[in-house]
Length: 383
Image 1 (spheres, rainbow, N blue to C red):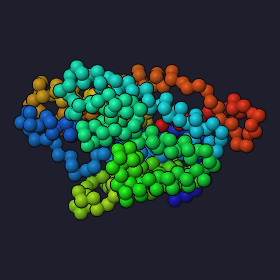
Image 2: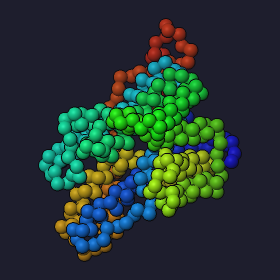
Image 3: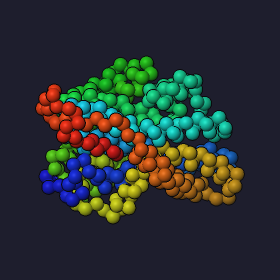
Image 4: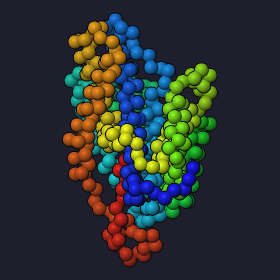
């Protein structure tokens, strides 16, 4: 482990880190694989083939990786803005502009599609209050006992929004104090959830231990800011150990002997830590995956729109003539290609057009007579 000078990929403050972008692509693909394997449970009985059993691994670790990356990116892109007047407003505006348009668009398409072809839905939408809560990122019960929005994957965005609010509050303070306050709040919420087990829906959702994964990412970013870097062998070891943690082991899993935030959050933190702290030029594979990493938000949100119709097409046209492993390969390919198109044709153009009113950040110590437009400092918070 060394405290090395920043390499060329790190010269711009808050600049893109190719290994992290590549990891976003891998995380999204893990989620897609897990869901594609789950679809075979519906296909198998209809075509007379056994479903693909992928339960030996925790494919949902892709979500855990996303949460750790989210905490890392927030600190990486915004650390120098802590304590500056107006910074928290711009931060929230940029995050809303980043995630809301595509999510609202796909939620609306899902609602329309559900009215046209309800047989493709696993559960009903719920009443208008649940639909409104889904658009507003407010946790709400779906189907009576599950806290999920209309678009089931949106539960992660509900947590993201909650984290953004906590992070924005921390930005009112200088970095050191802000990070201490954020850590105390997140740990306090997770502890309260574990001890009190609140029954109220929003409190139960916001005090899940999984919120600790955001904190893991924030702490990794602070280490990164200190210039600490790992040689290739050490970084690879961390990533390898993290992915080994995806496997389910007898005695560790199934009985909740270890808190989920530790059981899956720590392997995710090892993976992100190895990718972020790697010293040297990005591997060729990372560079190849960077483009898909840019489209990972589209891939994460859109892949059910590709998997579910393809399931019905497979049952009608292929049936049991081909092994279901080919369905998974085809589903992942179709989801990836359509999501890249969605990113290039919809997500990225919308992101360029959606602009909140300019709210520049004043330098630290600026007097009350100085306008916020003086010494503009743009926020770079794109993940």
